[in-house]
Image (cartoon, rainbow, N blue to C red; front, side, top):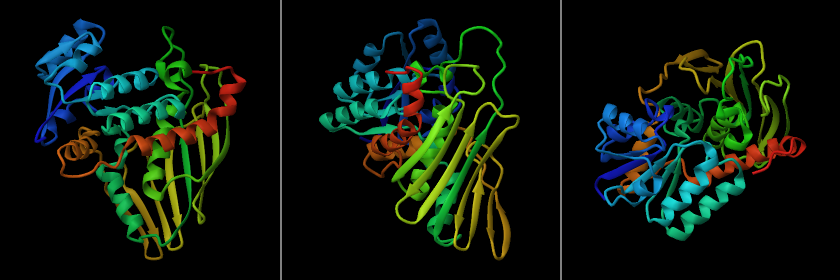
Length: 330
């Protein structure tokens, strides 16, 4: 395959700037069809983005002979269903993060990938963003010596109730949880990428604001292999915004945010160095390029169903008690 012709299922907000244009910008990639259940909105998206065809039925897009691969950008509660349908139709999948609501749903998706012999990619796009490529290069190059520990903090104030429907991102039956699943999974996946898989995790989750049914406070301790430990604290009912990851080594520390654009901070005996690492205009484009390259046989993508399922298992471990206590099941 020299050019991958993409179809998108679910052209909502995330596809407007963060992802959709990336399928048109990537080398060897074309966006040829989009689908949304509201046909008028699908047609409007196609017109504004210069996409040749639109559908209001997912099966019609999946069956389109000019669609080689499908990007699934719906909420998480339909990720497993659509992924299995696309793979069974003989087409590779790139699915939004989180991969699914639970690790069990991720396993269904992985099983379909194995049965079909087709690849499954997940949009944990920080793995390919230049900002975090630089961070990995620094760590792998020994800039802070041997890594010993890490610390994650992500805080936001509780949302203001403005009436209307509750956002799907804080409805566990749709999202699998709340902002921890939506945002925290990005950082958990990044730790997996930068430092290696989590071997053991312990923690708990609570709802302190009663603003929505999902958890808004999560605390965790991690062990990665035999020599690296970590802590994490996510509070979405705090009095401030905070977003910081610190990785501690024998010769220094590397600090950065998961969601901001401020410079990386490298602290060693020589002092503190600030390293500019801005976001690309289309944040998913670098990862999309790796997916296209793999499908065309000229590279590999760093974000797969296997790696994303590891993150889902960590999320399940941290939210398991909360889900059981609150009768949340899928």
